[in-house]
Image (cartoon, rainbow, N blue to C red; front, side, top):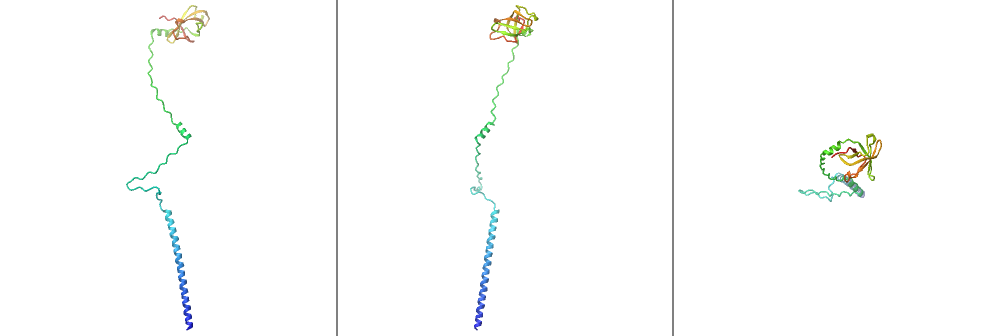
Length: 203
């Protein structure tokens, strides 16, 4: 009987140890399964966070239905440096001044009969030199043109007579010296080189 009790006790101990080891293995398996589930949830959460759409910034409120969305704040344009500003101003085209009014050119006055006669006179010679202080002129005509002492001529400029001369003593082949009658020269007029010598015009 004593041996039966010992065998029964050993059986109970063995059974208890088997149950304990089975429970412990079950707990370990359960813990491993829970840890695996936790890791799987963490991976799913990370994937959802990576693929989730980006929402509006915290500082921007979504528009209320029936109202316009607030416009984004505009940034002021950058201020150009002084050199760039001067360059931009220098490229601005200057304002075109208003055109001066075009005045009609008056028609020239018709020529008088005397002016027509003065223009029609043939040129005998021209003034080569004028000595205002001595009061004489040198003309480009002499003995070759049969210029003689005491002959009078008129000086012409365009369509007017500006003076009268009288040939003096000095007469050469191609030029002569003639005295200028100062009273025959109009006020404000001065004899010039290349004024033309013509016959005396009778008014």
